[in-house]
Amino acid sequence: MTDEQPISRRAAREAAGPASRRGSRPKPSKREPATDADGEKPRGIGALFAKHPTGWLIGAIAVVFVLLGTGTVFAGVSVGSAAAVLPSATPTPEPPRDVPEGDLVASRLRTCSIAGLAADPRLMALSGYVVRVDTGEVLFDRAGNTPARTASVLKLLTAAAALATVGPDFQIRTSVYPGSQAGSIVLVCRGDATLSRLPAGQESVYKGAPKLADLAAQVLANYSGPPITNIVLDASYWSSADKWDPAWKRSEQTQGYHSEVTALQVDGDRSNPATQDSPRSTDPIGRAGQYFLDALRAADTNDEVADSVTLTTGSAVNTATELGGVSSQPLSVIIPHMLLVSDNTMAEMLARITSKQSALNGSAASLQQAIPSALSTFGIPATGITIKDGSGLSEFNAVPPSTVTALMIQVNAGAPNLDVVRNGLPVAGQSGTLSGRFTGANAVARGHVFAKTGWIDTSYSLGGLVQAADGTVFAFAFYAIGDGIQSTARAALDTLTTGVFTCGDNLSNN
Image (cartoon, rainbow, N blue to C red):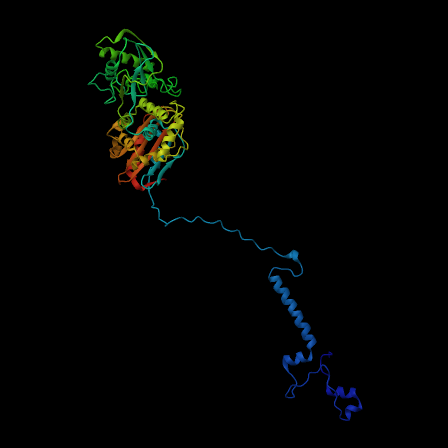
């Protein structure tokens, strides 16, 4: 029996001795609970707590410690030991997401691909870019932002730069002034390669070109003095030493595609003024001087031209009085012709004139500044543009196809003066250098492709506008580039462009 259990009454009386037996009741134990208000002793848990309060208190405290310890373990913390605290993971904040401006518009799923046509091995290394002109959506891109050689597609940039600089009404003036010595006159030319030696009633390749015969008649009508014994040829509008790019092949000159770039020449220095591709000389300035002398002799009725006349080069000193002068057709006429037939000489002349009219020196090197600067008028970025000439003959010209399409978007939109470029674009199967192209299956695009062609030994190119079969208008530029590229690349470019025409707005950049 433990000390927490009550003893029996008999044992109590025996322990109490005689007093207990005389009827004396023992005093209640201090551990024994008192009766309640009804005289009853507490029973159950209450009775147990009443009998043993200290034990219950100790037990309760123990339970509390157990519960606290258990809860701490569940919380992952060891009581009394900070080293045992497990660090909670720090969440990594998600980066902010871009929120599109304006209303979200679903983009259409396009399924018409020209990837197979673009992989034609005849194209070798293809650079290309196709943009919907009204929305600016790029629907085809193959290295479209990478600068590359353009061939004669560069003439689009040259034409636009000239129009931005001097406008469509600009005319190129050729003048004659009195010389500094008696019997001397000075012929000053400022880049008009259209000046023609043909007599009245005959047309050169440049329709409506000014005539040397008219200039000679004016000079003799206004000249006073001793017979003319000396004609000074002034081609100093830009340096005549800067007349041939080292990258150009001299075969361009002998085969008749290109003259030396001198500010004074007649009929583009052609042997046959009526033929576009006619051999050129190695001395366009001297040749022009002789043609002018011939025109003076033909117009001389009063022996104003001496029997012996020398031709020298120099610069005019007295420009206050013009003895005679003629002007070219306006650029609105010259540029469409230049683009339609891809006239290299005229392109070079326009590039140098653009430089001079931009307060530069007219050199080939100055074109790098003159042409991109002029194009900025139309919002065309200069990034990635390398200009070595105005014709595109140098393989070191480099223009991204996307730059060409940016210009063509402006042409299509009718930007100031660029309607002249639009009017000069060859039309597939109908005009200019595209008149004989887009044949066979590609004939469906005839009359719907308006583009400048290009060709050098290492590149064939095509750039302009396509009015697709579904009416969508695209600006495009394709360069087929590679050493040893063949003329069959032309047909491959036509087929690729016809693919754009056929796909229309369903064209996919896949």
